[in-house]
Image (tube, rainbow, N blue to C red; front, side, top):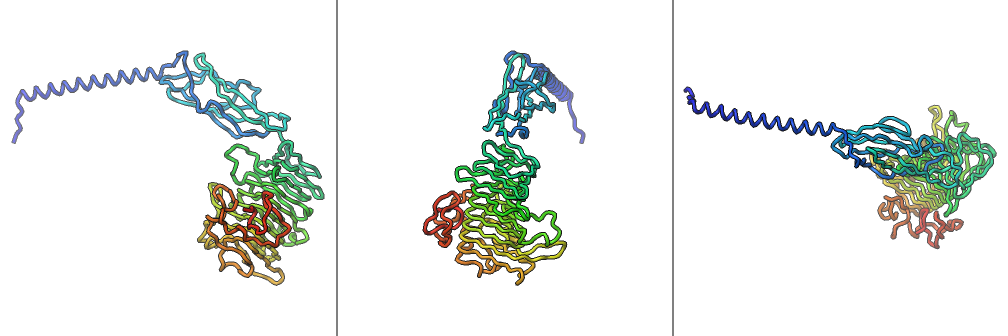
Length: 504
């Protein structure tokens, strides 16, 4: 059926369409005008004499920076708060080219920049670094600088501050018998060697900062003896807060084969190394002939803190080691690895490993092995390892691998035992986390095993390894270690001593 539309209906529709079309055109014209006005406004340069930039910070502070080394790069952000373009007629360092600070503005380096335009509501980054001149100051020297901004005749500034510290710098030194004084820090820019038959003595209170990849190699004797109030520190040479607890910032201390006996670390902190202490390095060795007890390093470690290592806290290879009242914790591999035999004794030590933002704890706290493989051939060596009044625990996460059921003590005898290379180990009055089916329990004497991890330490999550009230380590140590009368912090031990490095 045909649809009939009369004439009046047609006229009405035309008028309606005509009316709507006018409204639409008018609306579009209005939008265009507003857009054009806005675009013109945004394209216009703001020339007001009240022009003010805004900044992400009005003061930028660097941590202590060693002279001649320089800082990491920091930045500030500069904003145009207006709906119009804004020209910054000048950005410059107040001290000009003589400044120890360096600017990078919009990809350009220099000390002064002119005629930079900022789009409406836009911003730019200004990157800064600092390399202080040698100040010949024993104490950190405050260095202050201003970044000056000029915009429409108005001047603003951002203050930049850093502490520049002069130091004794060592790079590939062959160290003869000498004393490293504590009047200013020592910085290892490259690996250094304590030469054969020479002695390096480090004064109490000395700070030693090490460049990435730098090792202190000992072929002679090292005496690093601090005190409770003036301890000695080894760490990386980046002092910005970001690096405070970052593992792997420097190499470690390496006691070479045939080094002189008598080396000691006492009241010394070693942090953020690759492996903090290495005895009997395996580098460049192609046969077992290089490894004999006659060439074994013999080192004593007392009242030390060793932590946040990218690999091990202590690594030995057929060496002789004596450790007491020492705290070793948080390493990406074993905190203590005693490999290819050797003689070691640990008294009143705390060895603990817990995963955190930087540490992935997947290997046991302690590993003892009696073998090595040279050119595809396995060789055995004698083990004599004793642990008295020690704590060895952690939160190992590798449950499905070799180290099943969360155990932290790994007796590694993959090549078996041999009468010609005895495997002697003893845990006496220790607090241990272990798997009884994977260890000969006749070697575990008067020990407490597999405690509730939340009842041992005061605040392990914040690296506080003081004993918790009611800890199973309290009053349960052996009373036979009469030669050791105090703890890591020089606190006197009572008649019923506690396990671990800290007396409750």
